Length: 210
Image 1 (cartoon, rainbow, N blue to C red):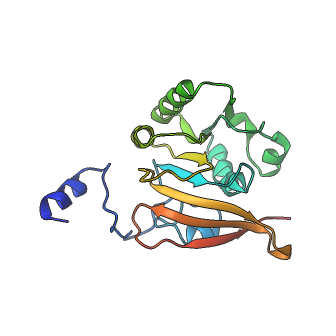
Image 2: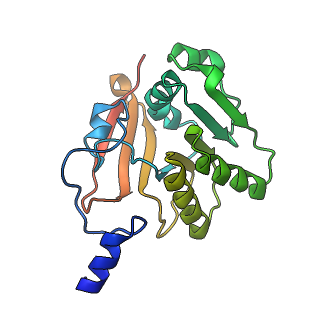
């Protein structure tokens, strides 16, 4: 990279170099899973950024990974917005995970894609939403880039659950998640596909309770 390009990247918070390596103290949001934090460049979920969580189908452990963050957000009395979840949230399980469901809002899957994206963008920009999670498969990179800018403006993390990996995605983190059931080793296998601030990607096994 020549000097002019390096200067452009350095002075624009929305640009980053693929060969950057995270330096200094970890600045990520703790995931609540030590083995997962260990493979993420910032030591946790990236702040004010879009995360793409890729699963072969819904219900393969993606929500299990998010429970500690949801608990943390509701303890801080921050709102969590679910957009187009494939299933009705099961309130008893959330309460059992010590999540205050009074701070959860859900927008059902019958909303149009256009309205869903408008809602996500406005919620991210509002600074009143602590965490936004959306289940959307077909998103062009231009839309994800807009959501990234909105997340940065509103100081809000955004997690997009998808069944297929998008090529050249501008998301700060792409994480592939699969449920593994090998006897007593039941848990979630997470593999980093892309992470801002890293040039080597790793995987982790996260045990599931029970």
